[in-house]
Image 1 (tube, helix red, strand yellow):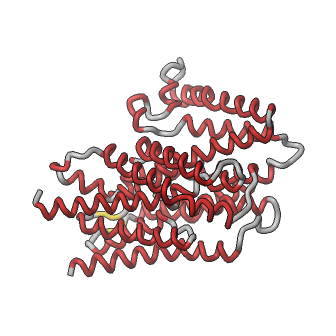
Image 2 (cartoon, rainbow, N blue to C red):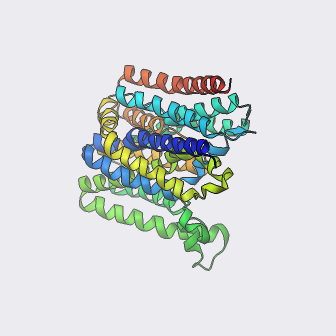
Image 3 (cartoon, helix red, strand yellow):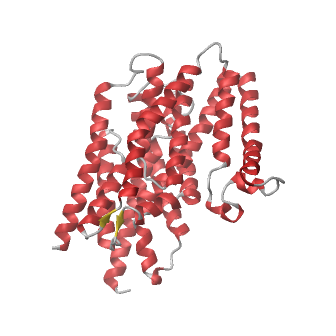
Length: 392
């Protein structure tokens, strides 16, 4: 490669690292443990430390799906050159940085998706209607599905006729079943999931064998949580809440790293001289998220946990269960998703279950929703305009 190309690749890689840092400092680093911090289950600084490590693990082991979608699935007919990748990442990171400074959670998925599509169209690329339909459906349904599930759980947990030694273990079994069927890169040779790997040792085939293997993971988890909640209800709820926060943090890394490194993947593949593996790129993005979580996330954690609602452990559990389910759905589909949208919607749903607005500031909510909508349109317009100006 000539020196100019090498320089552009280097700048693009630095822009990707900056984007990963911003993601760690913002949506990926702040939202997963915000409900637990709001419930006083963990301190802000400790939450930032833990979420950074788990986000890194999620990025490396599950980050390929969304990275591929962002890098190759949003625009047809063109591959973004290094200069375009720089434009995309700087627009996305810049808008996210504004959100961090102001305390309003700008949606990373909206900014990066808008910028990629805008730049791609400016380069002569063609739309991908089927992918846009998937993305649009998930974005639109998330507040209703996530908020609805959170509302339902928050309505059940405090009921006297459904004791928490029963309701919480049931939630644990559901979460355990999902964990058993998560796809991990390091399990590819064994079927990709814990259930698939376990079913190889069960003399049953197909869905039956997979179901039995899933039960072997999920049921012990439920029994453990039941034992813990029965002997120490307050402590058991806190520990279950922290476990959920860890799963959401892991899922955040898996989903959000693609927004930072996805545009780099086609560049590396088309340049044989680069000789950089996808795993190495995901590792670099994961490190950026980790550092961002440690250095910049506390501000946003405080904003989400204290300004949107006053959360107790039951409402926090109600918030994190649907957040984990939606996040993993997005990873499976390869759809970029906003963790700010997921968490805030679930917080609102759980708050409505306890009466009134649940401590949610209508003004704060309104400004946040407008920021989500505006960030996509602004990122698209900036991407299209800047790339068009560069190409003139």
